[in-house]
Image (cartoon, rainbow, N blue to C red; front, top):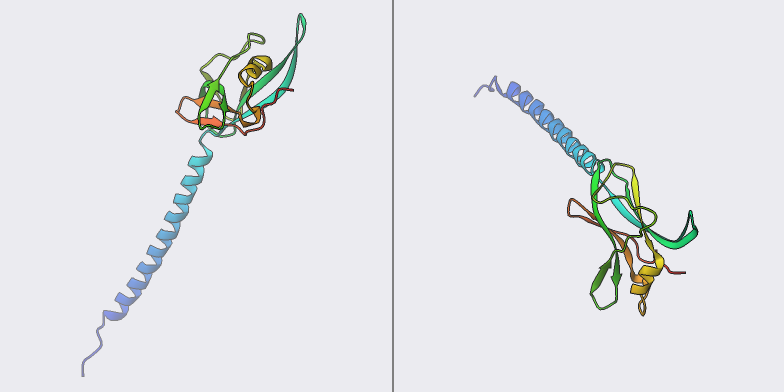
Length: 164
């Protein structure tokens, strides 16, 4: 008859402890990875483009307008640089014409413009100048566009641009 190995029980206990430590390490590393993904995505910039039609302004000569206001809003936690803005006109043929005609009044923010976290910047264009580009086409297909220094493009929703 063979005698039991005296090191079998300690080896089994050590292997169970090793399994528990390895399982705990896997759980902690998974939680850490998820936390890093959340922090990195929330810490980045998130720019949205919006358009507001029918803006009327008052200067020293009286009421002017209507203006079309294009707004870039940074909802992220990091600053980003806006290099250009435009209105993208889709004519239905697959071609997109990009137009940007800044108004002389009021003075526009200079480009490139650093857009801090939680801030916004607005650009104005006379609605009559943009409406001339939309003769014969539907302005509801157009959308505001913000170009960023990172190479990304933030496009707004369609249907925000009207010429009432």
